[in-house]
Length: 398
Length: 185
Image (cartoon, rainbow over all chains, first blue to last red; front, top):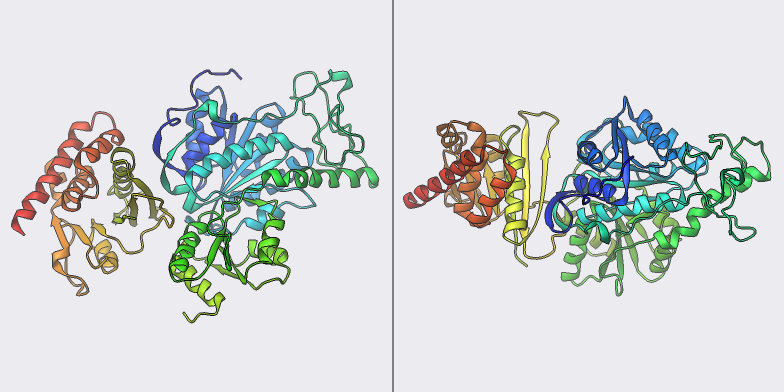
């Protein structure tokens, strides 16, 4: 693929009214994405449309595949070939991608999967928002595997977190999920995107040894002895480094192995490499939390409503604060645990019947009551509804 | 903080969402305010209810949706009947009198309703498709939510090449109709 020395896009460097999906495509290009395979689906379609237009201009490739399963497979192939690769979908397609997503996690192939969540289950409400895929982003594919998922609440955050998704995927050699929702995907906001030189871009670790010495899934040269969370160096297919890639449990040389300590080591190492990076991945954008007596936990589109409700509560004399994780997987367990020990109650606001609230309950560990306020009819909850739920938590009459 | 909530409503195919994008760009890019635009629509490409919302503020916009509009544009009767009751007490409704008959809702004053034959004016220009731009001109003249100069820049930046003159005339027709209507009130 040829490098085209033109600016990332005309959109960078000045204020524009941009849709969340547009910001995602801009972020992908800025992060170095040069391959997209997808099967367009509302509310993510604009990402595919824009990538089909932008990628050829940046020396990349766009391919519309026959379905979501094949798109995910093509993304994996492109990444093995050395390209930063992405696909975008919504719930129905996210379900189909799960098998290959697990393959990418186990074979440590970096890639980015965007899920713009819509009303579900099944075909659900194509043009309406939901946050019903939170647990699927964590546990959608079978087996113990690491998961990384980012949740933007604003259009400028979509750009920022798309770049972070690619950088994380490359640094950790793992699939990363950008978990948007229809609110954020379709909303247009005024944003000033950074110019290309201002975007920090991370590339995967490539072999520092000649092909004859390369061990595909071994520790990188210079790794400390006993490192059980290392990220192996990754050779581009077709560059003379011959190695085996399989979804079977494999040894350091990539070939299948049977049950035993080596299998145990591999599965644990994959989880550990993400756990070890969790403190650097964690990013909570909180409001009014320092002196809060009641905590609202919310993310993505729902957090826009929750933020307004917290401000309304403050006007009424209720010391409320918003805890808004942008990295939901790995879950910011310690941050929630320490806040739970200080506040009188937690309200989790999300567009589902209780998903991230389960993690919040685990972290709170009985230190304070945790309630969930959810909606599943395809409508973003209104601030007044959240405020009422918050006042009920405080024991006030609503 | 000043926060103005605008809801544009009608049916799919009337250019409601494009009108919302243009209005938001006029406010955010050319007037230098902050703006958020969102929409709701059905799976159809034509027909079905269509709604675009624009929030214009001089600061941060947290909740991105309209709760009670300060300004409502109703391009068909269904949209008028559905959304007129949600108007703020001192809000303004702009109706396309080609398609909409005001009244029937006692909860607000007739003085809140401003109307002109928006679709009719677009037909007079030879292209009914520019009704959304006529409507923006009318709405801008009546409410002043954005400046006329910014609106014109935003329209010309968004419409297809070769249609600039038609759209400029559509915008002017909306403004003139609003001024003529104002002199009658």
